[in-house]
Length: 106
Image (cartoon, rainbow, N blue to C red; front, top):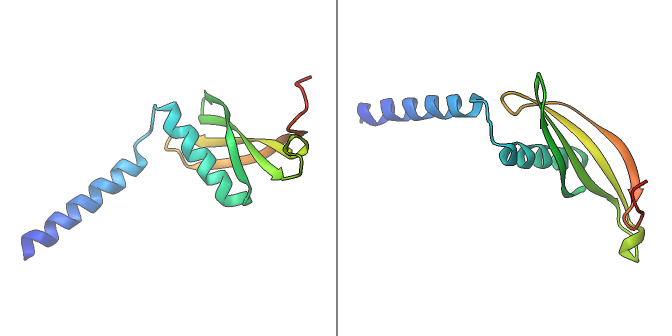
C-alpha cells in the first residue's frame, strides 16, 4: 500500500514537470493558443493563420467567428494575436482586425 502511494507521488511530480517542459512543436502551440483563446472570448475558432517563435516564446494568429450571418459570406471574423511564453502559458492576446468572410485581402 505504501509503495502505491509513493508511485502516485512520483507520477504526479513527473506530470507537473511535463506541463512545464518547453515545447518546440508549432502544431501543439497553435492548438493550445486556439483552445485558450476560445475559452476566454467564447467565440468559435475558425483556424490558425500563423505561428512564429519570438524571443519570449510564441506568437500565434487565430481567426475566430465573431458574428454569424446569413449568408455566411457576410459573417464577421476577427484575427487575434495570442502570445505564449516558452512553457505555453498565455502572456497576452488582442484583436488585430475584423473583416467580412467574403472580403478579399487588401
